[in-house]
Length: 243
Image 1 (cartoon, rainbow, N blue to C red):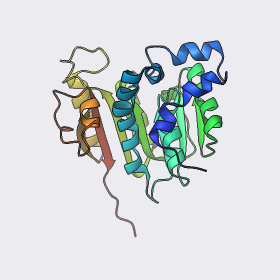
Image 2 (image 1 turned 180 degrees about the horizontal axis):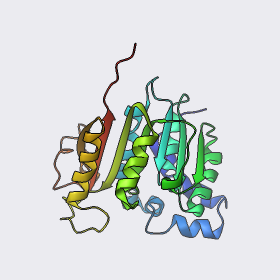
Image 3 (image 1 turned 45 degrees about the vertical axis):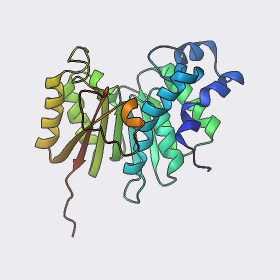
């Protein structure tokens, strides 16, 4: 299977629409303000798409590209960009994307077929009710996990789904940039998430990202909370001692 670059994944729907691969319901969903695909159709906004969202998703490859990581779960996967990208980059990794929105899952499945990616599946499921036959090595969410309520139940579910030495990466709207004004995440929510992971045996770190850091190769400003729109929480289960 040929490996995909992030541009291949994020810009694919333009050609797919031209080839009439989506029905009107799916096109309406793709062009909604709640998804980033509409940005691919305008030159300036396309650069924002690639430099911000592209940078976030592309950086996941660092965490998934090793022999110890064989399973990836994307919570609130939407149309499946992160799942498709990681599956295409690592043949040993199997990606699972789950989302409550059936139309977005239908789109993700069509994109999977378009890219001929085999090691990936998409499920129309509620995260809190999701049952898996395995533990996951890497779990990711982009602008979705913070919307799952109650938060305590979501965190417990997340912890139970993660395997030994697993990693959780949560990308969320940064309340420090938005002056705590957005409804989905507040300063105290960030602290509660961090405290939960600390108390359950994780090492926790934070990064802040936006189009600004996406344009700087060394990500020199990723620790500056006041200029970046996205907060990334990275929680790694502490290494266990094996016989």
